[in-house]
Amino acid sequence: MSKKILVLAGDGIGPEIVAEAVKVLNALKAEGAIDVTLEEALVGGAAYDAFGDPLPEETLAAAKASDAVLLGAVGGPKWEPLHISKRPEKGLLGLRAGLGLFANLRPAVLYPQLAAASTLKPEIVSGLDIMIVRELTGDIYFGQPRGIETLPSGERRGLNTMVYTESEVERICRVAFDIAMKRGKKVCSVDKANVLECTEMWREVATKTAADYPEIELSHMYVDNAAMQLVRAPKQFDVMVTGNIFGDILSDCAAMLTGSIGMLPSASLNEHGQGMYEPIHGSAPDIAGRGVANPLATILSVAMMLRYSLGAPEAADRIDAAVSKVLDQGLRTADIMSEGMRQVGTAEMGDAVVAA
Ligand code: NAI
Ligand code: MG
Image (cartoon, rainbow, N blue to C red; front, side, top):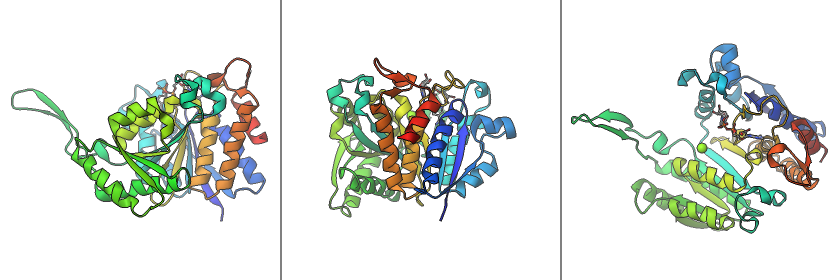
Protein backbone atom coordinates (compact mmCIF):
# COMPACT_ATOMS: atom_id res chain seq x y z
CA MET A 1 0.00 0.00 0.00
CA SER A 2 1.22 3.48 -0.83
CA LYS A 3 2.75 5.32 2.13
CA LYS A 4 1.81 8.94 2.74
CA ILE A 5 4.47 11.59 3.22
CA LEU A 6 3.54 15.10 4.30
CA VAL A 7 6.04 17.64 3.01
CA LEU A 8 6.41 20.81 5.08
CA ALA A 9 8.97 23.03 3.37
CA GLY A 10 8.82 25.82 5.96
CA ASP A 11 10.82 29.04 5.82
CA GLY A 12 14.19 30.42 4.71
CA ILE A 13 16.23 27.75 2.93
CA GLY A 14 13.50 25.19 3.80
CA PRO A 15 11.82 25.22 0.37
CA GLU A 16 15.20 25.05 -1.45
CA ILE A 17 16.57 22.04 0.42
CA VAL A 18 13.23 20.21 0.60
CA ALA A 19 12.88 20.50 -3.20
CA GLU A 20 16.10 18.47 -3.58
CA ALA A 21 14.97 15.82 -1.09
CA VAL A 22 11.68 15.52 -2.99
CA LYS A 23 13.69 15.01 -6.21
CA VAL A 24 15.37 12.02 -4.58
CA LEU A 25 12.05 10.58 -3.38
CA ASN A 26 10.52 11.02 -6.81
CA ALA A 27 13.49 9.36 -8.51
CA LEU A 28 13.14 6.28 -6.26
CA LYS A 29 9.39 6.31 -6.84
CA ALA A 30 9.79 6.50 -10.65
CA GLU A 31 12.00 3.40 -10.48
CA GLY A 32 9.40 1.54 -8.43
CA ALA A 33 11.85 1.27 -5.52
CA ILE A 34 9.33 2.87 -3.14
CA ASP A 35 5.56 3.37 -3.19
CA VAL A 36 4.82 6.80 -1.73
CA THR A 37 2.34 9.64 -2.15
CA LEU A 38 3.48 13.17 -1.38
CA GLU A 39 1.25 15.90 -0.03
CA GLU A 40 2.28 19.46 0.88
CA ALA A 41 1.14 21.81 3.64
CA LEU A 42 2.23 25.03 5.35
CA VAL A 43 3.95 25.34 8.70
CA GLY A 44 5.95 27.99 10.55
CA GLY A 45 6.25 31.53 9.25
CA ALA A 46 4.76 30.56 5.88
CA ALA A 47 1.64 29.28 7.66
CA TYR A 48 1.51 32.33 9.90
CA ASP A 49 1.58 34.62 6.86
CA ALA A 50 -1.25 32.68 5.17
CA PHE A 51 -3.46 31.81 8.16
CA GLY A 52 -2.19 33.77 11.18
CA ASP A 53 -1.21 30.47 12.81
CA PRO A 54 2.18 28.67 12.65
CA LEU A 55 0.43 25.29 12.89
CA PRO A 56 -2.98 25.42 11.17
CA GLU A 57 -5.43 22.65 12.10
CA GLU A 58 -5.34 21.28 8.55
CA THR A 59 -1.55 20.89 8.74
CA LEU A 60 -1.67 18.98 12.04
CA ALA A 61 -4.51 16.79 10.74
CA ALA A 62 -2.56 16.04 7.55
CA ALA A 63 0.52 15.17 9.65
CA LYS A 64 -1.51 12.78 11.80
CA ALA A 65 -2.92 11.11 8.68
CA SER A 66 0.52 10.54 7.15
CA ASP A 67 3.14 7.84 7.74
CA ALA A 68 5.94 10.38 7.87
CA VAL A 69 6.54 14.12 7.79
CA LEU A 70 9.45 15.73 5.97
CA LEU A 71 10.24 19.16 7.40
CA GLY A 72 12.65 21.77 6.07
CA ALA A 73 13.13 24.40 8.76
CA VAL A 74 11.05 27.18 10.26
CA GLY A 75 11.69 30.69 11.50
CA GLY A 76 13.51 33.84 10.53
CA PRO A 77 13.98 37.50 11.43
CA LYS A 78 10.67 38.46 9.77
CA TRP A 79 8.70 36.69 12.52
CA GLU A 80 10.91 37.50 15.50
CA PRO A 81 8.76 40.46 16.67
CA LEU A 82 5.76 38.12 17.08
CA HIS A 83 4.55 36.93 20.48
CA ILE A 84 6.03 33.54 21.38
CA SER A 85 2.67 31.79 20.87
CA LYS A 86 2.61 32.87 17.19
CA ARG A 87 6.27 32.28 16.42
CA PRO A 88 7.15 29.76 13.67
CA GLU A 89 8.99 27.58 16.22
CA LYS A 90 5.62 27.03 17.91
CA GLY A 91 4.61 25.08 14.80
CA LEU A 92 7.44 22.62 15.40
CA LEU A 93 6.63 22.13 19.07
CA GLY A 94 2.96 21.66 18.19
CA LEU A 95 3.83 18.94 15.66
CA ARG A 96 6.04 17.15 18.20
CA ALA A 97 3.33 17.22 20.87
CA GLY A 98 0.46 16.50 18.46
CA LEU A 99 2.17 13.43 17.02
CA GLY A 100 3.53 12.23 20.40
CA LEU A 101 7.10 12.14 19.09
CA PHE A 102 9.06 10.83 22.08
CA ALA A 103 12.21 9.44 20.47
CA ASN A 104 14.67 11.83 18.87
CA LEU A 105 17.35 10.10 16.80
CA ARG A 106 20.40 12.22 16.12
CA PRO A 107 23.17 10.53 14.18
CA ALA A 108 26.60 12.13 14.20
CA VAL A 109 28.40 10.78 11.17
CA LEU A 110 31.63 12.16 9.83
CA TYR A 111 32.27 11.18 6.25
CA PRO A 112 35.97 10.41 5.78
CA GLN A 113 35.89 12.79 2.78
CA LEU A 114 35.07 15.67 5.17
CA ALA A 115 37.42 14.81 8.05
CA ALA A 116 39.16 18.16 7.62
CA ALA A 117 35.89 19.98 8.48
CA SER A 118 36.10 18.95 12.13
CA THR A 119 37.88 21.05 14.70
CA LEU A 120 39.28 17.80 16.13
CA LYS A 121 42.24 15.90 14.72
CA PRO A 122 41.27 13.69 11.76
CA GLU A 123 42.44 10.51 13.51
CA ILE A 124 40.08 11.21 16.44
CA VAL A 125 36.97 11.75 14.28
CA SER A 126 37.45 10.25 10.81
CA GLY A 127 34.82 7.56 10.27
CA LEU A 128 32.84 8.65 13.35
CA ASP A 129 29.36 7.08 13.40
CA ILE A 130 27.35 7.61 16.59
CA MET A 131 23.58 7.46 17.07
CA ILE A 132 22.25 9.51 19.94
CA VAL A 133 18.76 8.53 21.11
CA ARG A 134 17.25 11.39 23.11
CA GLU A 135 13.97 11.15 25.02
CA LEU A 136 11.87 14.09 23.87
CA THR A 137 8.67 14.37 25.91
CA GLY A 138 9.71 14.16 29.58
CA ASP A 139 12.41 15.39 31.97
CA ILE A 140 13.01 18.86 33.36
CA TYR A 141 11.36 20.51 30.33
CA PHE A 142 7.89 19.38 31.36
CA GLY A 143 8.11 18.36 35.06
CA GLN A 144 5.98 20.06 37.71
CA PRO A 145 6.37 22.14 39.81
CA ARG A 146 8.04 24.77 37.70
CA GLY A 147 8.21 28.52 37.45
CA ILE A 148 9.56 31.61 39.13
CA GLU A 149 8.13 32.48 42.54
CA THR A 150 8.68 35.28 45.01
CA LEU A 151 9.59 34.12 48.52
CA PRO A 152 8.26 35.85 51.67
CA SER A 153 11.66 37.56 51.94
CA GLY A 154 11.02 39.18 48.57
CA GLU A 155 13.75 37.19 46.89
CA ARG A 156 12.73 35.31 43.75
CA ARG A 157 13.26 31.57 43.29
CA GLY A 158 13.27 29.74 39.96
CA LEU A 159 12.60 26.00 39.75
CA ASN A 160 12.16 23.13 37.33
CA THR A 161 11.68 19.49 38.19
CA MET A 162 13.27 16.43 36.61
CA VAL A 163 10.59 13.75 36.17
CA TYR A 164 10.55 10.35 34.45
CA THR A 165 8.25 7.37 34.89
CA GLU A 166 9.57 3.82 34.53
CA SER A 167 7.50 3.23 31.41
CA GLU A 168 8.91 6.34 29.73
CA VAL A 169 12.45 5.18 30.42
CA GLU A 170 11.75 1.63 29.26
CA ARG A 171 10.13 2.90 26.04
CA ILE A 172 13.12 5.03 24.98
CA CYS A 173 15.62 2.32 26.00
CA ARG A 174 13.81 -0.17 23.76
CA VAL A 175 14.14 2.24 20.83
CA ALA A 176 17.88 2.49 21.49
CA PHE A 177 18.34 -1.27 21.88
CA ASP A 178 16.37 -2.01 18.68
CA ILE A 179 18.53 0.44 16.75
CA ALA A 180 21.73 -0.94 18.25
CA MET A 181 20.74 -4.46 17.20
CA LYS A 182 21.05 -3.26 13.58
CA ARG A 183 24.39 -1.54 14.26
CA GLY A 184 27.30 -2.32 16.60
CA LYS A 185 25.10 -3.77 19.40
CA LYS A 186 26.66 -1.39 21.94
CA VAL A 187 24.53 1.03 23.97
CA CYS A 188 25.82 3.59 26.45
CA SER A 189 23.10 4.92 28.76
CA VAL A 190 23.95 8.37 30.06
CA ASP A 191 22.72 9.61 33.45
CA LYS A 192 23.77 11.40 36.62
CA ALA A 193 22.87 8.52 38.92
CA ASN A 194 25.45 9.53 41.51
CA VAL A 195 23.52 12.73 42.30
CA LEU A 196 19.99 12.64 40.83
CA GLU A 197 17.50 10.01 42.04
CA CYS A 198 15.44 10.40 38.88
CA THR A 199 18.38 9.17 36.84
CA GLU A 200 19.31 6.54 39.42
CA MET A 201 15.95 5.02 38.51
CA TRP A 202 16.75 5.56 34.82
CA ARG A 203 19.87 3.42 35.25
CA GLU A 204 17.93 0.62 36.99
CA VAL A 205 15.23 0.57 34.32
CA ALA A 206 17.80 0.60 31.49
CA THR A 207 19.57 -2.38 33.06
CA LYS A 208 16.31 -4.27 33.58
CA THR A 209 15.10 -3.59 30.02
CA ALA A 210 18.44 -4.75 28.60
CA ALA A 211 17.72 -8.24 29.96
CA ASP A 212 15.40 -8.66 26.95
CA TYR A 213 18.35 -7.97 24.64
CA PRO A 214 21.05 -10.50 25.56
CA GLU A 215 23.16 -9.53 22.53
CA ILE A 216 23.36 -5.87 23.54
CA GLU A 217 26.39 -4.71 25.48
CA LEU A 218 24.98 -2.03 27.81
CA SER A 219 27.25 0.39 29.62
CA HIS A 220 26.45 3.38 31.85
CA MET A 221 28.20 6.71 32.00
CA TYR A 222 27.71 9.88 34.01
CA VAL A 223 26.82 12.79 31.77
CA ASP A 224 29.85 14.88 32.68
CA ASN A 225 32.17 12.02 31.76
CA ALA A 226 30.15 11.42 28.56
CA ALA A 227 30.79 15.04 27.54
CA MET A 228 34.52 14.54 28.12
CA GLN A 229 34.61 11.21 26.29
CA LEU A 230 32.74 12.64 23.27
CA VAL A 231 35.56 15.09 22.76
CA ARG A 232 38.42 12.83 23.87
CA ALA A 233 37.61 9.57 22.07
CA PRO A 234 34.20 9.77 20.36
CA LYS A 235 34.65 6.60 18.32
CA GLN A 236 34.23 4.48 21.48
CA PHE A 237 30.44 5.07 21.17
CA ASP A 238 27.92 3.24 18.99
CA VAL A 239 24.45 4.14 20.34
CA MET A 240 23.94 6.53 23.27
CA VAL A 241 20.57 6.78 25.05
CA THR A 242 19.68 9.53 27.46
CA GLY A 243 17.00 11.86 28.78
CA ASN A 244 15.72 15.08 27.28
CA ILE A 245 18.11 17.64 28.75
CA PHE A 246 21.32 15.58 28.67
CA GLY A 247 20.40 14.53 25.12
CA ASP A 248 19.82 18.12 24.04
CA ILE A 249 23.32 19.10 25.06
CA LEU A 250 25.22 15.93 24.13
CA SER A 251 23.61 15.68 20.67
CA ASP A 252 24.69 19.21 19.78
CA CYS A 253 28.19 18.45 21.04
CA ALA A 254 28.36 15.25 18.98
CA ALA A 255 26.98 17.06 15.92
CA MET A 256 29.73 19.64 16.04
CA LEU A 257 32.43 16.95 16.12
CA THR A 258 31.58 16.56 12.45
CA GLY A 259 31.99 20.29 11.80
CA SER A 260 29.33 20.44 9.11
CA ILE A 261 25.83 21.47 10.10
CA GLY A 262 24.62 21.00 6.51
CA MET A 263 25.25 17.23 6.67
CA LEU A 264 23.27 16.10 9.71
CA PRO A 265 19.76 14.60 9.58
CA SER A 266 17.39 13.75 12.44
CA ALA A 267 14.27 11.76 13.16
CA SER A 268 11.59 12.04 15.83
CA LEU A 269 9.40 8.98 16.26
CA ASN A 270 6.21 8.07 18.10
CA GLU A 271 4.98 4.71 19.41
CA HIS A 272 3.41 3.80 16.07
CA GLY A 273 6.61 4.30 14.10
CA GLN A 274 5.26 7.50 12.61
CA GLY A 275 7.99 10.09 12.40
CA MET A 276 9.04 13.59 11.58
CA TYR A 277 12.32 13.94 9.67
CA GLU A 278 14.35 17.13 9.40
CA PRO A 279 17.88 18.44 9.09
CA ILE A 280 19.28 19.59 12.44
CA HIS A 281 20.05 23.06 11.13
CA GLY A 282 17.62 25.98 11.01
CA SER A 283 16.24 28.11 8.19
CA ALA A 284 19.59 29.89 7.58
CA PRO A 285 18.09 33.28 6.67
CA ASP A 286 21.59 34.59 5.93
CA ILE A 287 21.83 32.43 2.79
CA ALA A 288 18.15 31.87 1.92
CA GLY A 289 17.03 32.39 -1.67
CA ARG A 290 20.52 32.16 -3.15
CA GLY A 291 20.58 28.50 -4.13
CA VAL A 292 23.74 27.79 -2.13
CA ALA A 293 22.40 25.84 0.88
CA ASN A 294 23.58 22.28 1.42
CA PRO A 295 20.63 19.91 0.76
CA LEU A 296 22.43 16.77 2.01
CA ALA A 297 21.15 16.91 5.61
CA THR A 298 17.60 16.95 4.25
CA ILE A 299 18.33 14.20 1.72
CA LEU A 300 19.85 12.09 4.52
CA SER A 301 16.70 12.78 6.57
CA VAL A 302 14.74 11.12 3.75
CA ALA A 303 17.01 8.08 4.10
CA MET A 304 16.16 7.94 7.82
CA MET A 305 12.48 8.23 6.94
CA LEU A 306 12.68 5.27 4.57
CA ARG A 307 14.53 3.26 7.22
CA TYR A 308 12.49 4.06 10.34
CA SER A 309 8.95 4.88 9.16
CA LEU A 310 8.44 3.53 5.66
CA GLY A 311 10.01 0.07 5.85
CA ALA A 312 12.32 0.62 2.88
CA PRO A 313 15.84 0.07 4.27
CA GLU A 314 17.34 -0.86 0.87
CA ALA A 315 16.26 2.46 -0.62
CA ALA A 316 17.67 4.19 2.49
CA ASP A 317 21.02 2.46 2.02
CA ARG A 318 21.06 3.58 -1.62
CA ILE A 319 20.60 7.23 -0.60
CA ASP A 320 23.39 6.98 1.99
CA ALA A 321 25.67 5.42 -0.63
CA ALA A 322 24.76 8.08 -3.20
CA VAL A 323 25.66 10.88 -0.77
CA SER A 324 29.02 9.24 -0.11
CA LYS A 325 29.56 8.90 -3.86
CA VAL A 326 28.94 12.59 -4.65
CA LEU A 327 31.45 13.47 -1.92
CA ASP A 328 33.93 11.04 -3.53
CA GLN A 329 33.31 12.86 -6.81
CA GLY A 330 34.57 16.03 -5.12
CA LEU A 331 31.26 17.92 -5.22
CA ARG A 332 30.87 20.39 -2.34
CA THR A 333 28.38 23.08 -1.41
CA ALA A 334 29.93 26.25 0.00
CA ASP A 335 29.62 25.17 3.66
CA ILE A 336 31.80 22.07 3.13
CA MET A 337 34.03 23.46 0.38
CA SER A 338 37.76 22.83 0.58
CA GLU A 339 40.73 23.23 -1.72
CA GLY A 340 40.74 21.15 -4.89
CA MET A 341 37.02 20.32 -4.71
CA ARG A 342 34.28 21.50 -7.09
CA GLN A 343 31.79 23.96 -5.59
CA VAL A 344 28.14 23.38 -6.56
CA GLY A 345 24.80 24.93 -5.67
CA THR A 346 21.77 23.39 -3.95
CA ALA A 347 20.07 22.06 -7.11
CA GLU A 348 23.26 20.74 -8.69
CA MET A 349 24.01 18.79 -5.50
CA GLY A 350 20.48 17.33 -5.49
CA ASP A 351 20.79 16.34 -9.15
CA ALA A 352 24.15 14.68 -8.47
CA VAL A 353 22.64 12.58 -5.67
CA VAL A 354 19.81 11.49 -7.96
CA ALA A 355 22.33 10.56 -10.66
CA ALA A 356 24.47 8.64 -8.14
P1 NAI B 1 20.82 27.98 11.35
O1 NAI B 1 21.05 26.53 11.55
O2 NAI B 1 19.67 28.37 10.52
O3 NAI B 1 22.14 28.66 10.75
C1 NAI B 1 23.40 28.64 11.41
C2 NAI B 1 24.52 28.85 10.37
O4 NAI B 1 24.66 27.65 9.60
C3 NAI B 1 24.20 29.96 9.40
O5 NAI B 1 25.38 30.64 9.08
C4 NAI B 1 23.68 29.24 8.18
O6 NAI B 1 23.90 29.90 6.96
C5 NAI B 1 24.45 27.91 8.24
N1 NAI B 1 23.66 26.81 7.66
C6 NAI B 1 22.57 26.21 8.22
N2 NAI B 1 22.09 25.26 7.42
C7 NAI B 1 22.86 25.25 6.32
C8 NAI B 1 22.86 24.49 5.12
N3 NAI B 1 21.95 23.53 4.87
N4 NAI B 1 23.81 24.75 4.19
C9 NAI B 1 24.75 25.69 4.42
N5 NAI B 1 24.81 26.43 5.53
C10 NAI B 1 23.87 26.23 6.48
O7 NAI B 1 20.68 28.61 12.82
P2 NAI B 1 20.29 30.12 13.26
O8 NAI B 1 20.91 31.09 12.34
O9 NAI B 1 20.57 30.18 14.70
O10 NAI B 1 18.72 30.21 13.11
C11 NAI B 1 18.04 30.76 12.00
C12 NAI B 1 16.54 30.54 12.15
O11 NAI B 1 16.25 29.14 12.10
C13 NAI B 1 15.96 31.06 13.47
O12 NAI B 1 14.72 31.65 13.20
C14 NAI B 1 15.80 29.81 14.29
O13 NAI B 1 14.79 29.91 15.24
C15 NAI B 1 15.46 28.78 13.23
N6 NAI B 1 15.76 27.39 13.60
C16 NAI B 1 14.87 26.46 13.19
C17 NAI B 1 15.10 25.14 13.45
C18 NAI B 1 14.13 24.15 12.93
O14 NAI B 1 13.28 24.47 12.12
N7 NAI B 1 14.20 22.91 13.35
C19 NAI B 1 16.29 24.68 14.18
C20 NAI B 1 17.22 25.76 14.49
C21 NAI B 1 16.93 27.06 14.22
MG1 MG C 1 19.44 22.08 20.95
